[in-house]
Each structure stands twice: as C-alpha cells, then as structure tokens.
Length: 240
Picture 1 (spheres, rainbow, N blue to C red):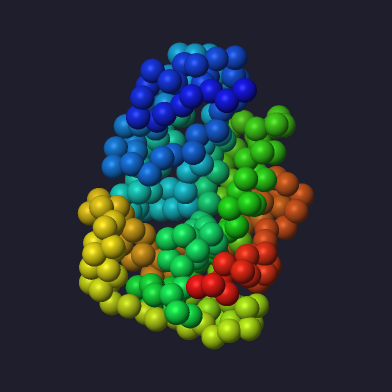
Picture 2: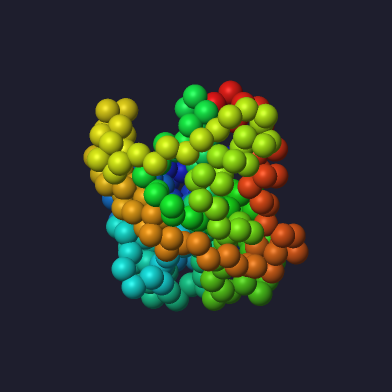
C-alpha cells in the first residue's frame, strides 16, 4: 500500500516507518537538505527502524569537500551516532545526468569541465545495489562506492553518443562564469547553482575518476558502460 510521505512534513514520517525494519534514504534536493535528512534519521530511530540504507555520494572521505558532499558526510556521521545499523551507497555522477541536468543541445554538450573525467554510473545499477542491500543480510556497516567501469571525459562521452546515435556530437568547454549565468537565466535557484558549480570544479580537477568493483561485488553483475547506456536510451539522445 502507498503511504503519504513528505520530507518537508515530519508528521508524515511515522506512518511511513510503521512496521518497517529497513529504510532507504534518498536525499531530497532542498536548500536545508542536511536538516531534513537528520530529522528523517531521528524519526526512523524513534519508530524502531533497525537499518538505514543511505544514498550518499562519492567524495565523502576527501580532505576537502564541496558543500553538497559535506552535507552527506555530516548526515553519515549522524546516522553512525544514532546507533542504527547502516549501509552507505556512494555513487559517482549519474549517466542519467546527460538527459536531465546537462542534456546535449543541438548536438553539443556544454559543461565547464575542461579535460576533467568521471567514472559515471548508471542509476539503474545504483537501484540494483540498493535493492540487494535492502532485501539481504550482511551489508551492515558497509560502504559501497558505486562507479561505472571507466573514467570518461566529456569529449569521450560525445564520441560515444555519436557512434551510438549516428549523428554528430561535440563537447563545448564553457567558461565557468558563462555556465553559472546560463543556469541563473534558466531560473535555477542561486543555492543550487552554487552547489552545481562546486561539483563542476571538482570534476574539472579529475578528483572523482576512480573506478571500483563494488557494483559487481554486491549484485554479481558488472556495471553498465556508457555505450550500453547510450544504446538503451538512444531515442532520447537522437532527439537532443
């Protein structure tokens, strides 16, 4: 049965937790994200939840962290201190971002990444890991860093999209100021623009290029590569 739930309405929390031993925390994109996530954790503990599986983010253990990653680090610590069992899923940038947050426009991908690379991960693989962790034992206290099978630059992403779709794609390395202004002109809130620009800067520095085997370790299946992802969504990219 579906149960009403709203991160911004704590009155809905208890009904969602009733009779539940494990919960999956998918953080909402809100300016007060940390406050909301911590309230969720506190309510889960009060309701008797035993195990939280949190979608966190790559880079939590880095010495210097962007604001968005700092919030995940603080929330992870709050979960540890709660005394509940935990599993943290730390994915890299989603492959799906290429048709949500930075879709190609007229055959061009506009990003201020320079020659930066990232081991983009398919959101479907993240979901498979989460489902396995939620429905089986032995994942308590584990941290899984979820990546694709290779680190790719945006020019390489464009090349793969061109091969798969049969149309031209290119990477346009835009100045950071232009990227910021473009988001603001598109109506993206200032706080969200600031978060995205911090993440862009990290990716430009090749900070999140590492590749792990955690997806295969948990699910038994290798992570999806970008070419397969593009083939699975070829209609979306041909329309871009």
